[in-house]
Length: 408
Image 1 (cartoon, rainbow, N blue to C red):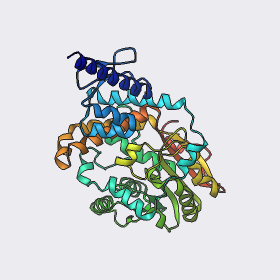
Image 2: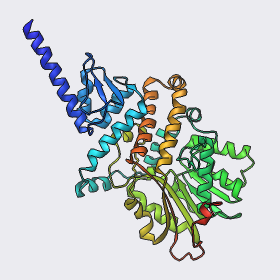
Image 3: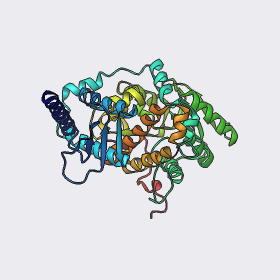
């Protein structure tokens, strides 16, 4: 009996040692941990924002083996539960991890690993897009806005609804591009077509938009036909690398994250071939404040083949072709708010997501949305809009007043 008690105490001490190590590795977040046997403790001072419930000892070893994949998989499987505000928990956890990583610099060896990442070939890119965007339009309709805009909204007014803020984003992009009736616009990676149709309907331009996702292109064509815009907007189901049209304006919103670092020069060369000498372009992308490898769980379950660039890495698109960078805006707080709104919408329809797929899938996407909002709130992720033009384009305005009408 005494041997059994001693072994139990030793096991509990070992479990708690593992938990403390995991929490230190995560930057000592202000959370508590409750084990399967009822033991609960924390190592940070103050009232914990939430409690992470661990349902079996195997979770600890999964977290030790690979913190990102271990947490993602175990939460998705229901082996980890969060008692309390899930988004607040993710903010606290993300802030702790980010702070710890900030103290360890990414050296030349890690940067070389980033640059040696697998090249996204045409076939692989199509597979990666299918994995994320062809889950079914009905799934995304459950929690996106009516226009199905799946990129950062622009909250000019903090009281704006998600729907209103997405329209504001579309106009914000169009103003930056200084669109004029009759211009030809090429869009690379058009989602469900909201920006292309907005540009055509409200700014009188002709748009040819490229996208690898069959489901998105099918939906976009149907929406354009219903709106009577099929003569102004052409949706092409193909990879951005097949673009050959000359254009006055080049725009890409939310595609660069899927291009892969090795293809940035290819993208820059394409823009250089297509964009008129007096043209203008805009690339809108999730970014980082420094180079870093992709999150392993996100890469495995959400965005295979993805890479989130730093501004320095994005320069590989512009510098080899001597584009002039005109404006860089960081919309990070706007994306934190956007993802929080998506999460709120998603939580209202979570039961329907379970019915469409299963519990594991529903939990996986809830984690992705909450984690994304936390990443933008803590500064782990940024959101860059970069406006650029050929270096000898002298037809550009002298100020940014066109971006903010009514501000003067």
